[in-house]
Amino acid sequence: MAILPSVPNLSPSRRTGAEFGLVAVVVIWGFNFAITKNAFELLSPFAFNAARLTLSVLVAGGLAWRACRGSTESLWPGRELVALILLGVLGHGLYQLLFVSGLARTTSGNAALMLASAPVWTAVVEAFTRQARVPPLAWFGLAVALAGTAVLTYLGATVQFGVDTLAGDVLVAASAVAWGAYTARGRPLVAIRSPTVVLFWSLLFALPILWIAGAHDLYVGRSAFREPSLWFALFWSGALSTGIAYALWNRGIRELGASATSAWNHLVPVVAVVVGALWLGEPVGPPQIAGGSLVVIGVVMTRQALR
Image 1 (cartoon, helix red, strand yellow):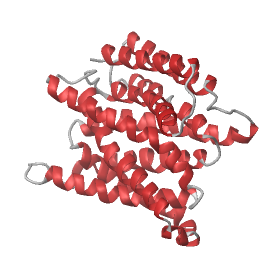
Image 2 (image 1 turned 30 degrees about the vertical axis):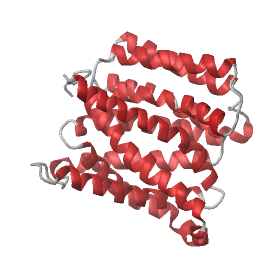
Image 3 (image 1 turned 60 degrees about the vertical axis):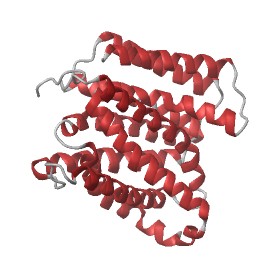
Image 4 (image 1 turned 180 degrees about the horizontal axis):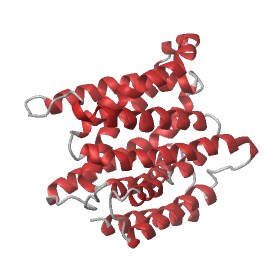
């Protein structure tokens, strides 16, 4: 496969727009761990996943239709059909099943730490497939950011490793590999198709997998849909965290490159800590400050290396 340039030749306004979009993604995802975890008290992980991804498909479909309206691009997948099916199975089928299964069996802090390894896997896939050049400074920045996440979550006492969380930790770690590969393998597609079109079809092709996994639990737990808190969780996790945020994520992949975009994953635990401090009154001490600082430094280094 031909090596793509590390970063497209962008105008400052397009780069800034893509990065502002990723800031929104980080904020949305920073809230999503706790919101999703609370929803599991009302509905099983598989049932919740099927319901929220259904909402995500509707949102992504609307965004894709709007992007194609009045343009020369067709909404239909065309020659990219097989690639979109594989991308959907990887990034929305396999990733989602592994993530929600793991999150239900571990703590939010553990899940945040495991998922923080995804940018490293994105860079590994890009380098292994010769899809893009990842300079040494970018690797170092990713390592610094990952170390900061470990300090932030582990020393900050939000991580509780043990026998009880081992299965969940392994599942979330596997989901991080799937998400990292999805981010890397999605770049060739968003280079030639609208990010929202790629999102819509990849979500749609993954939806049958999620419905098969969650259909029984959806029927058993159908009374939970009377709860307003579940609908709020579905809106946040389905419409915002997966629908709109994924569209912004795909835009970042196209405009900034896969590894540069994936590095923003490291900021999600930082947002989670800030939210906990401001909203829940959770303490912020030296581990949080030191870890958060390392994350920011690592992300900035990676961003500069991949400009």
